[in-house]
Length: 246
Image (cartoon, rainbow, N blue to C red; front, side):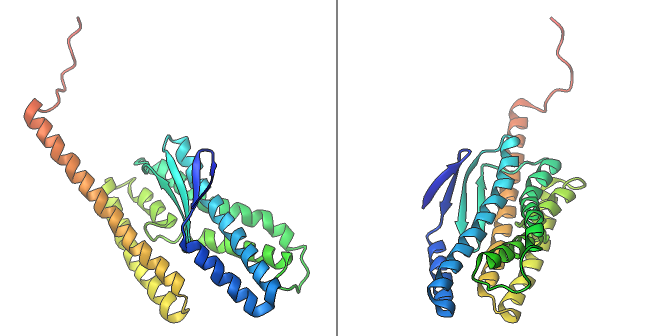
């Protein structure tokens, strides 16, 4: 479902998000009736507003570097900014990726003084509880995204750092390999230790998506190398002799 545009970026919601909204509302209803229902849904919408701000942090920096951002898609496992490409320059990728967690830490800094004004005890389904949950959520979101699991922000930052020493494809292979190991560990911990099945699903998605991006990049590199060879056979290697002045 398309909602609205922000600086030309389409904000959209996957249909499964409404299943999550219904589930959270039902849990709130079971605990505190209408009050729990209302505050649960408000809290979830506020949390995903922070997710949108996180993705906008990535998107605005990407747009600064001339990359088109088609839309931001919200799903139960989080948000995803769909871009036409990722900058190959390590410095640009580093800054674009870091912008998302930086937004979360900025929100944490804004909520920190407000948090100290709250009473020591307050009901979780209240505006005080909302502020507390948003503070914790942004802190967790910012830190969690810095874990070096490719395609998460930490994995892309890791790839950008590696790309300063290795070629882009090799850096991606290392980032994806480390990411697959960590995402597998995360999936097992979420499933068996915390019994947080949505978190396990998130790590499974990251595991598959990270390998998919590496394979797609590898195919593109092989195709580029093939066509460079074809052009070299037709036209010969590019000349290094400067043209004559006329």
